[in-house]
Length: 334
Image (tube, rainbow, N blue to C red; front, side):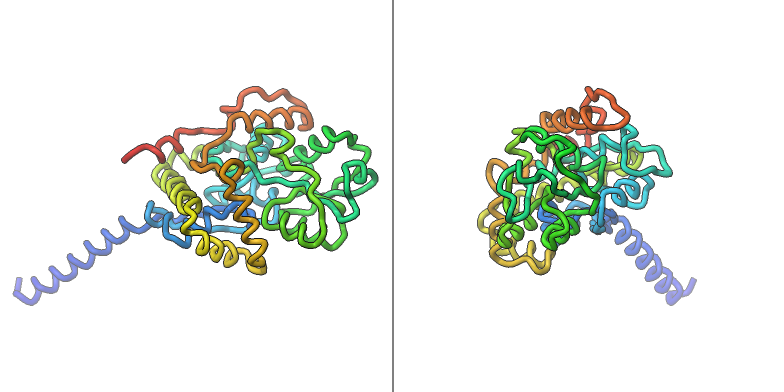
């Protein structure tokens, strides 16, 4: 082989090797379905500050208009992870989901996200629960998510199902806009929509955490089969989220954190963003600092579903709905 040919061959070999190394080191793409609201702030931070990439994953967020699209899509394999309510996981696993799926549900929560930050926001002329008699309130779906949570809150405040009406509208943003337009008199909402509603004269009657004391709202949910074959990617996702929480809770990062919040929720005023910061990063009731799952809160969600879910069944085993092995792997020292 001539010297020229050897040089060409060596160059080609180096190029191929470099490409293979680059592919091996490239972060794995993850499709994550979310409701675009303040409770996914850590995900925005992890994206913008490269915490996901540093942990080997390239996270792409997919906004969903409602839980039906989110859960049926997750179960049918249209994306990898869903940031959703634990009640949605329970509902579809128990055959009580809002909509049919092509694939048999086999979902599990692998990381906590929040207590839900749920506030019952109502029209300016509604001052008490009694004022809701004869009114219409909105939910995302009639049989999943936070619909049963709302019904339980109303029951504990003295209202029967016949005292009010529920209508299915969609996600947080959709329900906020409908309520502001006067189409319904109230809904369960989260920051920044709760705070924007307050600025417009709407009232907060109660919070889920205030009523139940423990409440598991949001979780990261996956298909068990997918998780088993993507353990490295899943632990990388959890680690990126944990790094974002550490960063968010550092007061030195507040100004940049607020810019990230407003960039991902265009139209949010600086005042609403600042108030959202106080709520979402409250040292007691804010984001769980280590993204843990509140098992007592899962039990509350199970009890509520046991009361309202159809077909009726008594739910007793919370470990059916979460698997902490991936979380433990993520927080373990390398």
